[in-house]
Length: 323
Image (cartoon, rainbow, N blue to C red):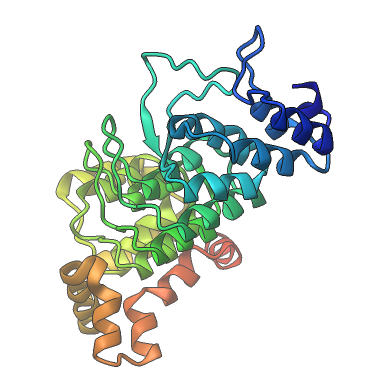
């Protein structure tokens, strides 16, 4: 254990050759492999790999994947993935191999996005590794019904993480047990930069009754205007709630809302809305199959509305209008 924690590769090799057990635990339940994974010495990852090569217990990988990913030991993580590790524990205890009865095995993509922090660079690197190994991106949490895409929109503000999940087949319209979609999660968490990639992936606007209500209750006026201009038809109760906000709605926004509500939705926007709502996650494959021009595709993806209402500089100009 001392040799493993202090990066003594030659000594570790000698001890292993003489029959030392890398899974032997100390009084705290820590093994030599775990000590190597948590060590910062230059040879610590080689030591962990050397000890793992002689271990036949595949279940131990579900515990070791946790410190391997936390401490950036990517070669060890890749080794474990190649040997079939696909899950981690919901409340990982890196200090012992003894599992608690309250713990659940969680798919690795789900687990990583649920335990990592915001948009740190290692979030993307680890996710890239997991996705490169073909891990499933649409598995649902049995308790909440959320997919990894839900978790990313709630916890992580980085749109690149969403792009990675979507490019590997994540469903943009998956609903959890409460009927909430990833787009609802992005609006609720005020991660507005996540809206464009979700819309480009075919996220449904019309069919998500909760979306407009969430935007109104949280006063996400950018989202309200985007939805209205995209042809969304809010319910009478949603409009009543919006009207009740009254003076809390800035005057330029009141004017824009009144203007878009008083005019019929332009025919091109209605056609784009029908395409988006009908095809949903199959939208882009259809546009590819018919050779849709870039200009038309960007219109269907609402890029002009996203730039107008979600770009910070553009939004500030709207708020300052008339002052």
